[in-house]
Image (cartoon, rainbow, N blue to C red; front, side, top):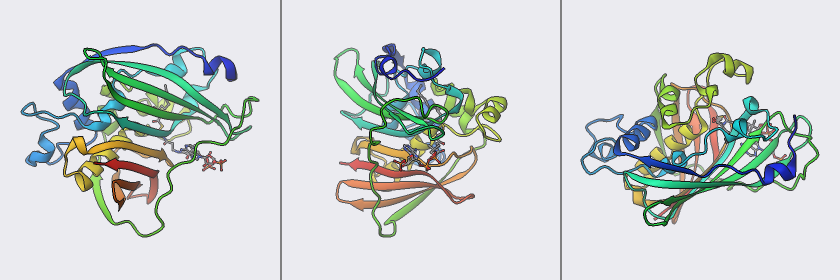
Length: 285
Ligand SMILES: CCCCCCC[C@@H](O)CC(=O)SCCNC(=O)CCNC(=O)[C@H](O)C(C)(C)COP(=O)(O)OP(=O)(O)OC[C@H]1O[C@@H](n2cnc3c(N)ncnc32)[C@H](O)[C@@H]1OP(=O)(O)O
Protein backbone atom coordinates (compact mmCIF):
# COMPACT_ATOMS: atom_id res chain seq x y z
CA UNK A 1 0.00 0.00 0.00
CA UNK A 2 1.09 3.57 -0.62
CA UNK A 3 -0.03 6.99 0.57
CA UNK A 4 -2.90 8.52 -1.42
CA UNK A 5 -2.35 12.27 -0.93
CA UNK A 6 -5.98 13.46 -1.28
CA UNK A 7 -7.30 10.62 0.85
CA UNK A 8 -4.77 11.14 3.65
CA UNK A 9 -5.26 14.94 3.67
CA UNK A 10 -8.97 14.41 4.35
CA UNK A 11 -8.73 11.38 6.66
CA UNK A 12 -11.24 11.67 9.50
CA UNK A 13 -9.33 11.27 12.74
CA UNK A 14 -11.86 10.60 15.51
CA UNK A 15 -12.49 13.42 18.00
CA UNK A 16 -11.59 12.15 21.44
CA UNK A 17 -13.15 13.06 24.76
CA UNK A 18 -11.13 12.24 27.87
CA UNK A 19 -11.73 12.72 31.54
CA UNK A 20 -8.40 12.77 33.31
CA UNK A 21 -7.91 12.72 37.03
CA UNK A 22 -5.24 13.90 39.48
CA UNK A 23 -3.80 10.39 39.34
CA UNK A 24 -3.29 10.67 35.54
CA UNK A 25 -1.59 14.03 36.06
CA UNK A 26 0.80 12.55 38.62
CA UNK A 27 1.50 9.50 36.43
CA UNK A 28 2.40 11.75 33.50
CA UNK A 29 4.77 13.80 35.66
CA UNK A 30 6.51 10.65 36.93
CA UNK A 31 6.94 9.55 33.29
CA UNK A 32 9.02 12.67 32.57
CA UNK A 33 11.13 12.31 35.70
CA UNK A 34 9.39 14.80 37.99
CA UNK A 35 9.60 13.62 41.60
CA UNK A 36 13.11 12.25 41.04
CA UNK A 37 14.03 14.45 44.00
CA UNK A 38 11.13 13.53 46.30
CA UNK A 39 11.95 16.15 48.95
CA UNK A 40 12.16 19.06 46.51
CA UNK A 41 8.85 20.96 46.97
CA UNK A 42 9.21 22.41 43.45
CA UNK A 43 9.04 18.90 41.97
CA UNK A 44 6.57 17.57 44.51
CA UNK A 45 3.86 19.93 43.32
CA UNK A 46 3.65 17.88 40.09
CA UNK A 47 3.43 14.45 41.72
CA UNK A 48 1.61 14.97 45.04
CA UNK A 49 -2.08 15.73 45.48
CA UNK A 50 -1.43 18.70 47.83
CA UNK A 51 -1.66 21.75 45.52
CA UNK A 52 -1.21 19.54 42.44
CA UNK A 53 -0.14 21.28 39.20
CA UNK A 54 -0.12 19.71 35.71
CA UNK A 55 3.15 19.71 33.74
CA UNK A 56 2.52 21.83 30.60
CA UNK A 57 3.76 19.12 28.22
CA UNK A 58 1.02 16.78 29.48
CA UNK A 59 -1.20 18.41 26.85
CA UNK A 60 0.48 16.20 24.24
CA UNK A 61 -1.05 13.04 25.74
CA UNK A 62 -4.54 14.46 26.38
CA UNK A 63 -7.48 13.42 24.18
CA UNK A 64 -4.90 11.64 22.01
CA UNK A 65 -6.39 9.83 18.99
CA UNK A 66 -4.00 6.89 19.44
CA UNK A 67 -2.00 5.27 16.68
CA UNK A 68 -4.37 6.47 13.92
CA UNK A 69 -1.60 6.10 11.35
CA UNK A 70 -1.89 2.33 11.92
CA UNK A 71 -5.57 2.08 12.77
CA UNK A 72 -7.10 4.12 9.92
CA UNK A 73 -6.77 3.47 6.19
CA UNK A 74 -3.69 5.69 5.66
CA UNK A 75 -1.49 3.52 3.41
CA UNK A 76 1.45 4.20 5.76
CA UNK A 77 3.87 1.48 6.91
CA UNK A 78 3.39 2.39 10.59
CA UNK A 79 6.19 0.17 11.95
CA UNK A 80 8.75 2.39 10.21
CA UNK A 81 7.21 5.69 11.37
CA UNK A 82 9.22 7.76 13.83
CA UNK A 83 8.22 10.98 15.48
CA UNK A 84 9.85 13.80 13.53
CA UNK A 85 8.84 17.04 15.22
CA UNK A 86 6.56 18.18 18.02
CA UNK A 87 5.08 21.54 18.88
CA UNK A 88 2.78 22.79 21.60
CA UNK A 89 1.17 26.16 22.33
CA UNK A 90 -0.54 26.53 25.68
CA UNK A 91 -3.47 28.94 25.62
CA UNK A 92 -3.87 28.66 29.40
CA UNK A 93 -2.40 26.45 32.16
CA UNK A 94 -3.77 22.90 32.16
CA UNK A 95 -6.10 22.01 35.00
CA UNK A 96 -4.86 19.19 37.27
CA UNK A 97 -8.06 17.28 36.37
CA UNK A 98 -10.74 17.94 33.75
CA UNK A 99 -12.77 16.59 30.86
CA UNK A 100 -11.21 17.63 27.56
CA UNK A 101 -11.83 17.09 23.86
CA UNK A 102 -9.21 16.73 21.14
CA UNK A 103 -9.95 17.48 17.49
CA UNK A 104 -7.23 16.34 15.08
CA UNK A 105 -6.60 16.86 11.39
CA UNK A 106 -3.82 16.33 8.87
CA UNK A 107 -2.40 19.72 7.83
CA UNK A 108 0.21 18.73 5.25
CA UNK A 109 2.16 15.90 3.63
CA UNK A 110 5.61 16.19 2.08
CA UNK A 111 6.96 13.46 -0.20
CA UNK A 112 10.73 13.57 0.26
CA UNK A 113 11.29 11.01 -2.50
CA UNK A 114 12.04 7.30 -2.91
CA UNK A 115 14.07 6.01 0.04
CA UNK A 116 13.92 9.40 1.80
CA UNK A 117 10.53 9.14 3.48
CA UNK A 118 7.38 11.21 3.70
CA UNK A 119 6.37 13.66 6.40
CA UNK A 120 2.80 13.88 7.66
CA UNK A 121 1.97 17.05 9.58
CA UNK A 122 -1.02 16.99 11.93
CA UNK A 123 -2.61 19.30 14.47
CA UNK A 124 -4.80 18.71 17.53
CA UNK A 125 -6.80 21.33 19.42
CA UNK A 126 -7.54 20.52 23.06
CA UNK A 127 -10.54 22.19 24.71
CA UNK A 128 -11.96 22.16 28.19
CA UNK A 129 -15.30 20.40 27.64
CA UNK A 130 -17.11 22.32 30.37
CA UNK A 131 -16.26 25.82 29.08
CA UNK A 132 -15.35 25.15 25.43
CA UNK A 133 -12.14 27.14 26.11
CA UNK A 134 -9.04 26.26 24.06
CA UNK A 135 -6.35 24.86 26.35
CA UNK A 136 -3.65 23.87 23.87
CA UNK A 137 -2.80 23.47 20.20
CA UNK A 138 -0.49 20.60 19.38
CA UNK A 139 1.40 20.08 16.14
CA UNK A 140 3.23 16.95 15.07
CA UNK A 141 5.35 15.80 12.18
CA UNK A 142 5.33 12.02 11.73
CA UNK A 143 8.36 10.94 9.68
CA UNK A 144 7.24 7.95 7.59
CA UNK A 145 10.58 6.41 6.70
CA UNK A 146 9.21 3.77 4.31
CA UNK A 147 6.68 5.88 2.38
CA UNK A 148 8.71 8.29 0.26
CA UNK A 149 8.36 8.41 -3.52
CA UNK A 150 4.60 7.81 -3.69
CA UNK A 151 4.23 10.70 -6.15
CA UNK A 152 2.78 13.38 -3.85
CA UNK A 153 3.77 17.06 -3.57
CA UNK A 154 7.29 17.64 -2.31
CA UNK A 155 6.74 21.23 -1.06
CA UNK A 156 9.56 22.46 1.08
CA UNK A 157 9.29 21.15 4.63
CA UNK A 158 8.48 23.68 7.37
CA UNK A 159 11.69 25.28 8.61
CA UNK A 160 12.79 24.35 12.11
CA UNK A 161 13.94 26.96 14.66
CA UNK A 162 17.64 27.83 14.21
CA UNK A 163 19.72 27.50 17.37
CA UNK A 164 22.08 30.38 18.23
CA UNK A 165 25.66 29.88 17.10
CA UNK A 166 27.25 30.83 20.44
CA UNK A 167 27.90 28.27 23.19
CA UNK A 168 24.84 27.42 25.34
CA UNK A 169 24.15 29.81 28.24
CA UNK A 170 23.28 27.02 30.67
CA UNK A 171 22.75 23.29 30.86
CA UNK A 172 20.92 20.83 33.06
CA UNK A 173 21.29 17.03 33.30
CA UNK A 174 18.36 14.70 33.96
CA UNK A 175 18.65 10.93 34.37
CA UNK A 176 16.15 8.38 33.07
CA UNK A 177 15.48 4.88 34.38
CA UNK A 178 15.63 1.60 32.40
CA UNK A 179 11.83 1.24 32.68
CA UNK A 180 11.18 4.84 31.50
CA UNK A 181 9.37 3.80 28.30
CA UNK A 182 7.32 1.16 30.13
CA UNK A 183 6.26 3.83 32.62
CA UNK A 184 5.67 6.53 30.01
CA UNK A 185 3.45 4.31 27.83
CA UNK A 186 0.85 4.15 30.65
CA UNK A 187 -0.15 7.64 29.50
CA UNK A 188 -2.03 5.77 26.74
CA UNK A 189 0.94 6.06 24.36
CA UNK A 190 0.88 2.42 23.38
CA UNK A 191 3.07 2.17 20.26
CA UNK A 192 4.66 -1.30 20.66
CA UNK A 193 7.95 0.13 19.30
CA UNK A 194 8.60 1.29 22.86
CA UNK A 195 7.84 -1.99 24.65
CA UNK A 196 8.07 -4.99 22.32
CA UNK A 197 11.63 -6.11 21.43
CA UNK A 198 10.36 -7.99 18.35
CA UNK A 199 8.58 -4.92 16.91
CA UNK A 200 11.60 -2.78 17.75
CA UNK A 201 13.81 -5.17 15.73
CA UNK A 202 11.39 -5.00 12.77
CA UNK A 203 11.67 -1.23 12.90
CA UNK A 204 15.47 -1.50 12.73
CA UNK A 205 16.36 -0.96 16.41
CA UNK A 206 18.20 -3.47 18.60
CA UNK A 207 15.79 -2.83 21.49
CA UNK A 208 12.74 -0.68 22.27
CA UNK A 209 13.50 3.04 22.04
CA UNK A 210 12.09 5.79 24.22
CA UNK A 211 8.97 7.59 22.98
CA UNK A 212 9.81 10.87 21.28
CA UNK A 213 7.14 12.41 23.48
CA UNK A 214 8.85 11.11 26.62
CA UNK A 215 12.10 12.82 25.57
CA UNK A 216 10.05 15.92 24.74
CA UNK A 217 8.42 15.79 28.21
CA UNK A 218 11.87 15.50 29.78
CA UNK A 219 12.90 18.59 27.77
CA UNK A 220 9.89 20.35 29.28
CA UNK A 221 11.01 19.21 32.73
CA UNK A 222 14.52 20.57 32.09
CA UNK A 223 13.15 23.95 30.96
CA UNK A 224 10.77 24.16 33.93
CA UNK A 225 13.78 23.58 36.16
CA UNK A 226 16.32 25.77 34.39
CA UNK A 227 14.33 28.80 33.21
CA UNK A 228 10.84 28.74 34.78
CA UNK A 229 11.64 28.22 38.48
CA UNK A 230 9.34 25.15 38.17
CA UNK A 231 6.37 27.50 37.54
CA UNK A 232 4.22 25.67 34.95
CA UNK A 233 2.28 28.82 33.99
CA UNK A 234 5.46 30.42 32.59
CA UNK A 235 5.93 27.90 29.78
CA UNK A 236 3.81 29.15 26.85
CA UNK A 237 5.07 27.01 23.98
CA UNK A 238 7.51 24.19 23.30
CA UNK A 239 8.81 22.99 19.92
CA UNK A 240 11.54 20.55 18.94
CA UNK A 241 12.82 18.21 16.24
CA UNK A 242 13.77 14.61 17.01
CA UNK A 243 17.19 14.00 15.52
CA UNK A 244 18.22 10.61 16.91
CA UNK A 245 16.52 7.75 18.75
CA UNK A 246 17.32 7.39 22.46
CA UNK A 247 17.05 4.51 24.90
CA UNK A 248 15.49 4.32 28.34
CA UNK A 249 18.20 4.64 31.00
CA UNK A 250 20.28 7.27 29.22
CA UNK A 251 21.19 10.63 30.79
CA UNK A 252 19.84 13.69 29.00
CA UNK A 253 21.60 17.04 28.97
CA UNK A 254 19.48 20.06 28.06
CA UNK A 255 21.67 22.79 26.55
CA UNK A 256 19.83 26.10 26.70
CA UNK A 257 20.20 29.60 25.24
CA UNK A 258 18.23 32.56 26.63
CA UNK A 259 17.24 35.50 24.41
CA UNK A 260 14.51 37.52 26.12
CA UNK A 261 11.29 35.49 26.24
CA UNK A 262 12.72 32.78 24.00
CA UNK A 263 14.69 29.81 25.26
CA UNK A 264 16.35 27.78 22.51
CA UNK A 265 17.44 24.27 23.46
CA UNK A 266 18.71 20.90 22.38
CA UNK A 267 18.78 17.59 24.24
CA UNK A 268 21.88 15.45 24.21
CA UNK A 269 22.02 11.77 25.23
CA UNK A 270 25.19 12.08 27.28
CA UNK A 271 26.59 8.52 27.30
CA UNK A 272 26.50 8.19 23.47
CA UNK A 273 27.01 11.92 22.85
CA UNK A 274 24.16 12.16 20.32
CA UNK A 275 21.67 14.98 19.95
CA UNK A 276 18.16 13.59 20.50
CA UNK A 277 16.19 16.84 20.10
CA UNK A 278 17.50 19.78 18.14
CA UNK A 279 16.09 23.11 16.94
CA UNK A 280 14.24 23.42 20.25
CA UNK A 281 12.33 26.60 21.04
CA UNK A 282 10.26 27.58 24.06
CA UNK A 283 8.43 30.80 24.92
CA UNK A 284 8.82 31.71 28.56
CA UNK A 285 6.56 34.30 30.23
C1 LIG B 1 -0.48 8.31 15.27
C2 LIG B 1 0.41 9.48 15.05
C3 LIG B 1 1.78 9.11 14.55
C4 LIG B 1 2.71 8.71 15.60
C5 LIG B 1 4.11 8.61 15.10
C6 LIG B 1 5.11 8.52 16.16
C7 LIG B 1 4.95 7.32 17.03
C8 LIG B 1 5.96 7.27 18.15
O1 LIG B 1 5.55 6.34 19.13
C9 LIG B 1 7.31 6.92 17.58
C10 LIG B 1 8.42 7.55 18.31
O2 LIG B 1 8.29 8.17 19.32
S1 LIG B 1 9.97 7.37 17.60
C11 LIG B 1 11.09 8.16 18.74
C12 LIG B 1 11.34 9.59 18.48
N1 LIG B 1 11.81 9.89 17.17
C13 LIG B 1 13.04 9.52 16.73
O3 LIG B 1 13.79 8.84 17.41
C14 LIG B 1 13.47 10.00 15.37
C15 LIG B 1 14.86 10.52 15.41
N2 LIG B 1 15.27 11.03 14.11
C16 LIG B 1 15.74 10.22 13.15
O4 LIG B 1 15.83 9.02 13.34
C17 LIG B 1 16.15 10.85 11.85
O5 LIG B 1 16.41 12.22 12.08
C18 LIG B 1 15.05 10.76 10.75
C19 LIG B 1 14.75 9.29 10.43
C20 LIG B 1 13.75 11.45 11.20
C21 LIG B 1 15.57 11.44 9.49
O6 LIG B 1 16.82 10.90 9.19
P1 LIG B 1 17.40 10.88 7.72
O7 LIG B 1 16.43 10.23 6.81
O8 LIG B 1 18.79 10.33 7.80
O9 LIG B 1 17.36 12.40 7.38
P2 LIG B 1 18.57 13.39 7.15
O10 LIG B 1 19.45 12.85 6.05
O11 LIG B 1 19.17 13.77 8.45
O12 LIG B 1 17.78 14.62 6.59
C22 LIG B 1 17.03 14.48 5.38
C23 LIG B 1 15.98 15.57 5.33
O13 LIG B 1 15.00 15.37 6.36
C24 LIG B 1 14.98 16.49 7.26
N3 LIG B 1 14.83 15.96 8.62
C25 LIG B 1 15.74 15.26 9.31
N4 LIG B 1 15.23 14.94 10.50
C26 LIG B 1 14.00 15.44 10.56
C27 LIG B 1 12.99 15.45 11.54
N5 LIG B 1 13.18 14.88 12.71
N6 LIG B 1 11.83 16.06 11.26
C28 LIG B 1 11.64 16.68 10.08
N7 LIG B 1 12.57 16.71 9.09
C29 LIG B 1 13.73 16.10 9.35
C30 LIG B 1 16.30 17.20 7.04
O14 LIG B 1 16.18 18.58 7.35
C31 LIG B 1 16.53 16.96 5.56
O15 LIG B 1 15.69 17.87 4.87
P3 LIG B 1 16.05 18.36 3.38
O16 LIG B 1 15.88 17.16 2.52
O17 LIG B 1 15.01 19.40 3.12
O18 LIG B 1 17.44 18.89 3.45
